Image (cartoon, rainbow, N blue to C red; front, side, top):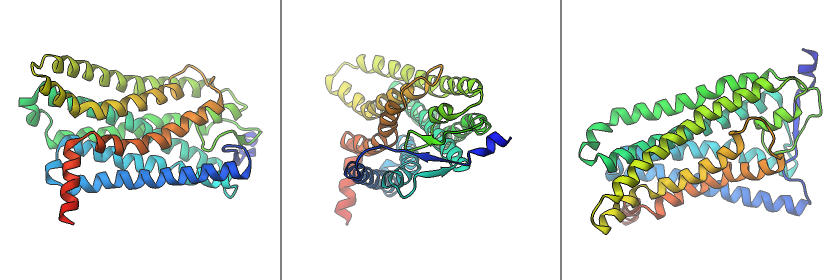
Length: 306
């Protein structure tokens, strides 16, 4: 117990370098964060105001945008303080809380993306029965299940991490608290946490990815059976934006978490985490608006009313 309480706070290194180098990172992070919040909040407001967007697909998209705002908020403000040198320390309890918060939101995003893939499967493969199969009640239940499942899946992992023993050093080579950084600093047996991380990754990331891939296998098969080229193009346009987001998200997430042990370089993890927690939430609004005719039409009507 004495060893466990000997390290009461950690020091986050962020991206070491000259003052000018770190300030340039701060400017980029602040700009990305501002655009992410504005972009995702705009999607929520647009769907809320446009009656033609009150469908299950855009309901799930609002959930995803709301999640992205909090996901990037859990990272960027602290990262900016770390790189400016004004807030480099983080207490042990806040470190565990940040880890739990970020991993729970990440797990929720995996579930939401698989639900959105299933929604597209019903819309394209069962168009005549879509309104009955994907009712408003079912869409709310699926969204709530994604949120609850995401947070419950990480509860045990966060608890096991909080029971690790830290004897020093207390320096984390990162701008946030993640599993690999905690395992690298722990002086106790980390095997239970590594096993729990691997199992949760298989259940959350791989299982949701399989559901998404199977849904798209049926979607692509159904699209290829459409006779007209215009019909195929229209059908594919309804799911191409979601497919782009899925590819970006699962690629980086599997690299970070689906592995039997913490063997990735922490410097590489910082780069992938930057992409995962800042770039992906920034790209989502642009992907869904620039490649979606319904959103662009609703946006045009909103400006015309003003």
